[in-house]
Image (cartoon, rainbow, N blue to C red; front, side):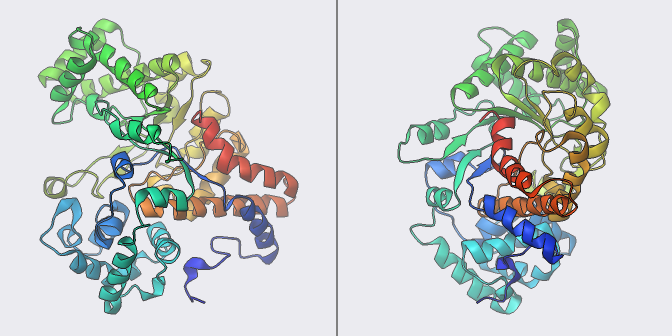
Length: 469
């Protein structure tokens, strides 16, 4: 029997023996339910092509900004971790660096997920992850990766993933999704998600080129702002035809704005010419968030929004390693004010589903739960990014439940590029939910019978309900 804490049956469950017993029973109800993952960043082509994973560093280390950012904070240069495709450092040497700094992950969510992966996915005791055994663990991981059964499609089955949504460029032909949908031997659902951020943000270096490409591809002969809006709607329809259930928007703030056609067209012209001010760029984005909601009322896509992040804040890191390499930093967001135009017009629209996510946990009880506690369109986005950690998930559940109950949440969202971490992340969420419900049972606030019903609803029915699955 391994001495690792990663496979302890009571991990994340309450310390009090009586409450823990209730939590054990609740977790048993959901531990083997299929995984519903309605938002993430796994590449559909990897699954469609059943692409082999190259090595432990490429699979577990280099693409995971949760991991690399903390190592960078502890003095490890990102090039030593092969971030952003850098290849001067060998995969084994990068793994040695990781092992030498493994203790930095004690107490972190990243450390928890990695421990689960090492033990449950690869059969390696996490206590063996240390500098002295780096080569041995690398070789053991590589041997597992090289097994014929260790391919994305087989892992989709072994991880029990029923639904996985990807995040896709509006001009993607979605051929990988089509191939998977047409493959009778593939039983999971891999759904595209419409993500138009780069076609909305004037401050993107290639905004004009992207917007022009969008118009040329789907504007139906119209030009300028009218062609742009027609193309946006047409590409959304294309995604719906290919199985999409949602659109995703990483807006700067939660602002929404209803402009006239002429006002919006004037801003769009400035954006295309590169002459828009920062305020005008933000105004156009806010207008487009309103317009995306209007389109969602028509085409049925669930609209998710996750504002409040300064993206790629370190210029030198961005230049050397590219975006999404760990230097995005959250800031406070005003949802109640920003969403007012959108919710005034669409908050009670039949069939409209809107899911706000946040990295500012102060707004869960102050703004998001009250919004979801009134508007039938609003579902509470699960804690994610910096908040999809055990203690933060517990704070989330405590913050929103007293106002909005259990029925108004999105279900757990893993939001990950780290494919092998998906089971660990979902199990962590299920254990936290079991712990929270067990406390309510022990305090005689709900019955144990009702708690068993609620946890199944949270894990399985909630994401199906919120994302129209």
